[in-house]
Length: 254
Image 1 (cartoon, rainbow, N blue to C red):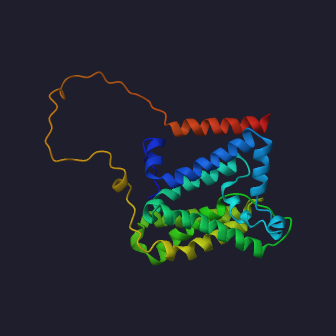
Image 2: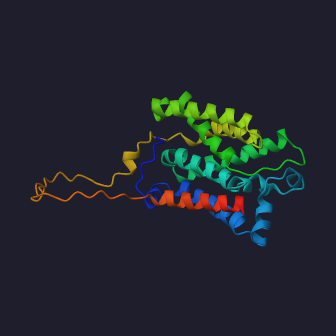
Image 3: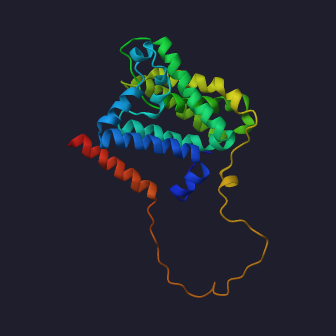
């Protein structure tokens, strides 16, 4: 479920449009805010940060907007890669609408719960961590109550990643622990509402690029000697990653 074998970014976007759109939004907002700092963009970013003081004053949209904002390149890349790894299977299993509902629902509920549990006026947060851990909550619900939807290997991966994620949440400073824990709980609670008609996910069912029509084919040149040349192709995704990392390092150093 979690092994990405798409041959190109175009193919990934085609099969998983919701996950792809969210990741593109992450990258675009980071680029406009951190790489090309513009006054208007900075103001819009500031309006989206989950500041509890402003929420106390009635700016309730801040329960939603922090989900697509991040505090730097590393934060954005970590959450985006987590979504790329763990989001596609659920997008196919739940469908586009239910996946959007589950992803943003978990993040919003985590932000609301954080506001009431930690109502300090000085508290502020950004990031998709609540939504990401919400996906883990849905997977864990499957492991416990809908075992037929998830294979044993994937269930083991979820358990290991979840344990590591919670450990890192508590030992790393500056992490919104509330979003992680409450996002997971929110995802677990949302799961029964969205996985009713879900079916097991098998990548081959969605990524079959060749269909056998039963016709027998014969290549008359198959035994001719051919000059062997090895072509090395660099996946465009890695090119983008390298460029983003280079830009981030440049901004950090200079």
